[in-house]
Amino acid sequence: MLTDAVNRHIELYRSMGFKYRVQAYMLQGFADFAESRSEEFIRTDTVLEWATSAPSIRQRYDRLLTVRRLACALNAEDTRHQVPPADVFGHAPKSRRTCHIFTQDEIDHLLATASQLTSRRSIQPVTFTALLSLIAATGLRVSEALKLQLSDITQDGLLIRATKFQKSRLVPLHPTASHGLQQYLAARDRIKTTSSAVFVSKRGTAIPYPTLIQTFLHLARSAGLRPGPGLRGCRIHDLRHTFAVRSLEQCAGDRKAVARHMAALSTYLGRAHVSDTYW
Figure 1 (tube, one colour):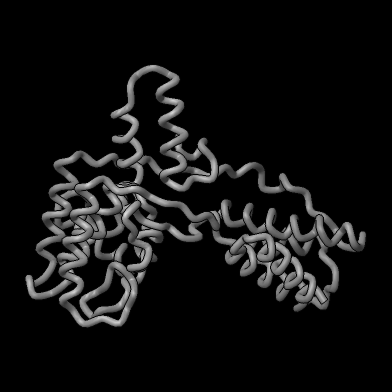
Figure 2 (tube, rainbow, N blue to C red; figure 1 turned 135 degrees about the horizontal axis):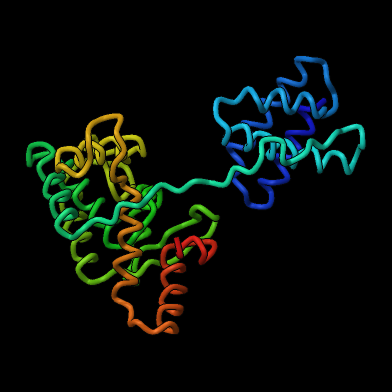
């Protein structure tokens, strides 16, 4: 059964530390598609038909390559599994959106807007002001900031645990960032919550990722930094890009200093490859 082979393949990748969530979803979808035709082995024409049903070129490409990796592994065990060609849909390199690099005035305006979210008796304006400030001051990923626990705040900085690439790192804080975080924690202590998350909602629970994204979009539009719904503009992730750019601008202009600073910045940001930091 293809489903059994798919499950073994998924478990293999996860045993090596990969989350393999999207790929697992795709492979299980392909297995269901093939088994609905009573097929026990991977067939090239079935793979191509299933991949072509995806709504975009990028998704077709991802479907094809994901199943092709499975086919290569299974073909080594049983040659009745066919390996589809990799270039059927051509090359589909990832396209990167142009970053928005915030000015200091834009960040100040964004934070001022956040501080006026609701009445002052709510923790919401304090929370979102502190959360956006921390991301802007450290370049943390949004998920890293939301997953922070009270025990992750140490005298040496923030302990970022098992992040995007299953790596943990220590993020030192500038004294001003540390002071701002402590001010927020003092306000947080005055509300009732059983959550150990650093950043909590007005209900005292951890802030969900979609809630933060929706709130950022609302704040950016209210601050005049982003056009209306359905139109592209600055993203919360651009605060991370801005941190990287402003950090490099502080570096001395000789090539050796830039190279050292780039390596340090890549480590601080928790990148797997320094080439990602170049971007």
